[in-house]
Image (cartoon, rainbow, N blue to C red; front, side, top):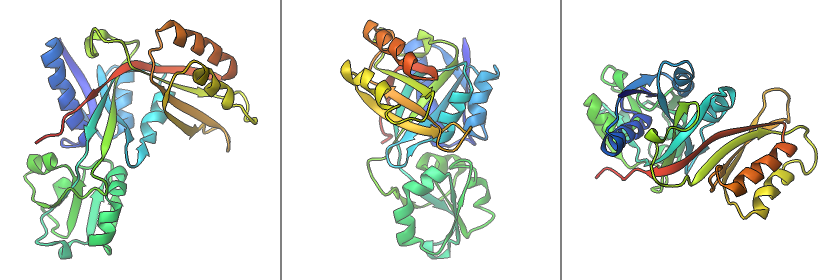
Length: 291
C-alpha cells in the first residue's frame, strides 16, 4: 500500500522535512510506503485529507518560541472528520539564504511569519534596515533569489541544498532551543498502522466551545482534569468568529482518552461545554537533529 501525504510546500519546508522523517519511519516500522504532495498552504493540506485527495497530512501546530500555529487549530475545528494520529517534534535551525555577496547588499528578506518571528532579534541586529516580507512558506521565495541578488530568504540548510543556493549565515534563530511540533492527521478514527504500535497513547487533544461567556465558565472544565491528576500540557484560546469575546479552547492532555478515568472526565466535560471535539489520541515521536 502506498500512502499519499499532504504537506506545506514548495519542497524544502520544515513541514516537508518532518514528513520525510515520518515516511522513513513508516517504511522502517510498518513497511508502508508513501508519496509526498506539497500544497500552497496548511489549510489546503488539511482540506486535501478531508476531501479524499490525500490519505494523511503533516501540519505544524506549535513552535517552542512563537507558540501555536493558529491556521492548523482553526482548520481542524472546522473539519469535523479529521483526527490526529501522531505528533512529531522537529528541531529547527534557520539559515539566511541569498545570492548577495554580503549582508550589506540585502534589501529584502522573505520567509514564513513564524520563521521571521523566530529570527527577529538577529534581523534587528544584522539587517536593521531591510524590508521584511512574510510568505506562505519558508521556501516560497527561494526560486526568485537568483534573479535578484538583493533578496534573501530564511529557510533550512536542507532547503539551500535542494535549491543549490548559498547560505550567508547559519543558526540565526534567536533561541538555540527551537522546536516545532507537527501533527500527522487522517480522516476518521485512529489507524494503528500510522502510529507507534504496542504503546498506549500518551496524549489526547480536544477542543470545545462554552455555552456562555460567564465568570468561572472555564474553571469548571479545567477542574475536572485537575481533580483526576491529569496534566494539561497546553491550553490555547481562539475566537469563535461568531462574536467578539467568544472563544474556543484547545487543550492537550497527557492521558489516553480510551482509559476509564479519561472516559469519565470527558463525559463530565460535556455537561459544561457547548460543543466538544476529540481531535485525536496519539503518541509523540521526536526527530533527531541532522548532523
